[in-house]
Image (cartoon, rainbow, N blue to C red):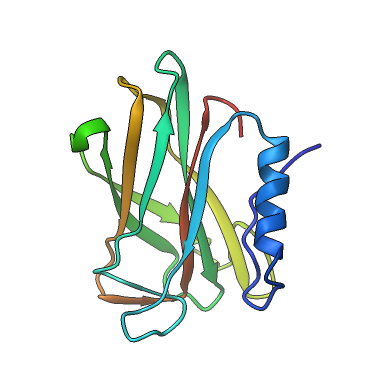
Length: 173
């Protein structure tokens, strides 16, 4: 059985996310962690990523001998006004110490020439999973925190519906 990235549809049933999470965890033994958060502006507008909103994802690493692939999940509306998304990540390790430098990533959501949406989706909602940190080595066992922030040139970024992080043992999606 092959598993895929799953986000609940905005008007889906309340139990659908729970069933999806249970199904994903049951069929992917290499996944260490995965979580997605819906975005909204400080005033409550749905699907707006405010520059001050910095989703943080906390996960545990037990096996320090393994290598891991860290993915960024993005869900966007077809009406998103740019072909790309710049985001910066910060990774802190056990004890709150930096586990590497903060890095800026350019994620391509649409074909820059045609404007055709990339990623999986139908209608006007598209899901993407980007391999952001391949072959990641976590030197110490413990709790890590990965924080994402949008790094575009506007404070309110409409059309980004959700972001998330996935950590899996290397080479296993």
